[in-house]
Image 1 (cartoon, one colour):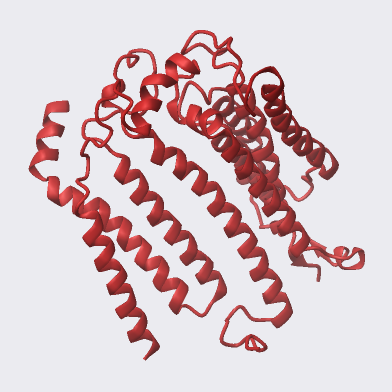
Image 2: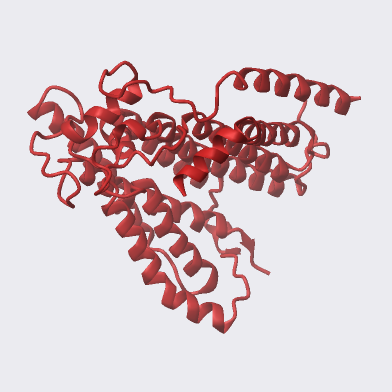
Length: 131
Length: 239
């Protein structure tokens, strides 16, 4: 099982690389597109979360090591420190997810307030945005 | 016209990102020799089990090596809850005009949620108590507990969270995190310093203060997320 996986990993290494990094970069670009192009405020917040997801995927993808296990010294894995994946990006992504959640919550509450005040969630129909 | 500009901008950003990351081989070993302590990751992997007694390296990084960062993170979450509550603040006469969003839940939903709710809360508590042994921890376990409360909130109209009790739990959890940090400062040298009595790796009571801090974080996250969900669900104007 493990040898087959290694064989596939080495054989299609470029395709897997492009697949992982490409997915992450595509998610980031989709999120940025939604933030810049969409008029609905809820869709802008959704774009923010998609951008977040892309960045997290990129981070965890960079930390992966071929044939690596999770960085946990469970029973049976006490001496396999040399084949564990990089724990630092995973810890940073854990922080980033929480901050992203907090940002999304506050942004959604602002959207609710704006909707109540102007009776619309579309930014091109909200007046008084220019000063 | 605006659309063309934005698509050109996105193509430029995407090209340079792809150009950069193609140089980093996916799956390549960038840690180097673990025992030589050349890289940060190598230091963490070779020293965590010996020095902190925690099996989960990520827990050791989040709670011990970067403990001050986690304290800031919990503070950000607290500020988000407070900001949400103050942005969506209603005066007393407005409060009477609103009620909680109540989705039409069927009998199957209500009976199922009543069976699932204790099991979900128990799973969440298990995840944050075993944060130093298995994948997961305070943040993940707290989120699982909050999903249980979300199910109860959307299926039972009469289910209300006790606001006072939640504020008390949240304050006590935050204060005990800071208190553990100051205790480390008084008994050792640095803020949030761990005790020397770290126990045996891979047993439930191990890692000194790390599991206690993660349990406290779990309570705080569960209460804060439940508070956010409660505030956000209470937006329906009464007819």
